[in-house]
Length: 140
Image: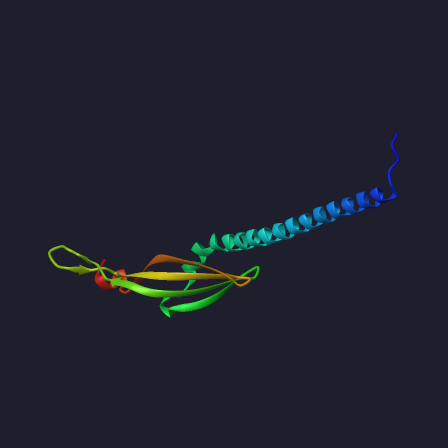
């Protein structure tokens, strides 16, 4: 059996320590990356949950104000702007033109979701109607 020299054990321990340090450094880098991607996923999830609530919120907004801010909870804020694209009052063609009881509005609404300095922007078109004449006034 061969005898080991005193210096070879020291070198083996140093090499093992370097390998262990490199493994720990790589693990820490992977943890950092994992936390970064987890934060991105949490941000996307928080905004996606609030986007699904927008159809109900759009019904309550006064789009004639042209802009506003809403707190949606969980740190998500909605800034919206609206622009009137078209306005119309249809007419029924009969022997005499009969104007409709309703005025029709088409808005382009820009929704800006803000969460932890991340901004997501969406544009939608919203159709609204407003009664301008009651049925009794036109004799229906």
